[in-house]
Image 1 (cartoon, rainbow, N blue to C red):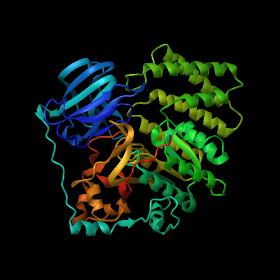
Image 2 (image 1 turned 135 degrees about the vertical axis):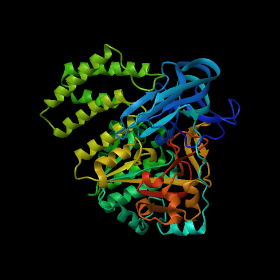
Image 3 (image 1 turned 30 degrees about the vertical axis):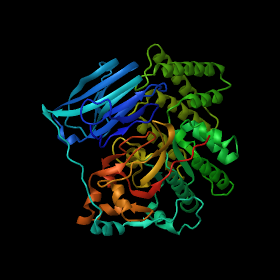
Image 4 (image 1 turned 180 degrees about the horizontal axis):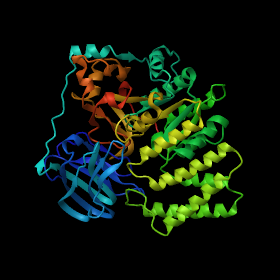
Length: 544
């Protein structure tokens, strides 16, 4: 494995790096370090396989794995096949035959027939548990013949290409949310049009300039386009606690932000946004702070306990449900998903059914009734959460927020991978349901640094500078520090000079974990409606 092009890794307490010492062949292997994982976490490397090569054929996905002191789980390969509606047609993660303990390089494989209705294929290496695993020599064989991937495109920023691209960019003067002159954002406002839901992405979870730019855009959307709800990729009830601060001044903002669990939002940039919302909510032009994730259940349990405080029988059932969830979470260590064994499964269903029945008979505040129902749903989502279902549930929760506020406009804050309009993403689901009311804005940068989890722990890391063959390299050649690009216009231009922007190229996608190769191929015009490019990034500033 010389260079793992087009691969991504999952955020978690595992550390994913390239290793030049432990290799099976070539110069590098992929190392996943799980020496101190959080309960329920797992490490995974993922890539996309072109379905057109394997439809109605048989595949064998091979690889070599080495493990050291692997306990409470296993290491293996995985392969997943979806149809156009995101239904799973085939899935194998070697859960019944993965490597455990200590093993020298061992070849393993997955075999599968690929149905005619296949639309998307994802595959990679998987590690759950404690210890260390290395992956190398990944190969895909199709009907007995080895598949060889095409070489990546290398495009130089010629004068003709740059002149064509300059026609479609709109310079932005500043990312600073305190910059008062909004003239440079007027084009952004025009491009938003009448969209009711605008999703603002990020190519890493730790870029200060991107966070500040999003703050500035949210401020603009609220004050000039009527957006009155903000929703972030954070656990739903905990985010609503922040809303109580922005509306009523309840609580300590730093504690409330940290209460959303992930360090990614525990930054001075997020604190500045929250404090601005609090000041803005003193005016008639208010904005709510909400969230749409479901990775934790405790606050939903608390909401249900408080909601039924006068029903001692039901509260006892909710406490029993809480005990079961705590046990399930503890036992989920080293597992990819949540599994409840009998009789806890049946008892959980009984308790949830009783809560729902009680809510149905609720004759009091309709808003409170809807909120209690949603917290029951969040518990169900937690129990059904997997690596693949999270985006579906996040989209469902955003649709719930939208339904509860039919006259509102929503600004979304999430990673590029969640807001994009392709694959299994939340953004694709929202685009299908909201149609022209949904607009996706991706963010990226050329060079600099960002905050991430890596070899130095949670720290500042140097970004991989963009190179020939990446979208960002062509963007930086324009010598414009910050600009937006309307990708919808690009689709209508068939110029030969712009052909590169309508094809596969490398694009930065990092998340919260530092990886050696930060780029993977995509067709950018299919992913987003608008791209905002910032030449240089610095690390987000963590709250301490």
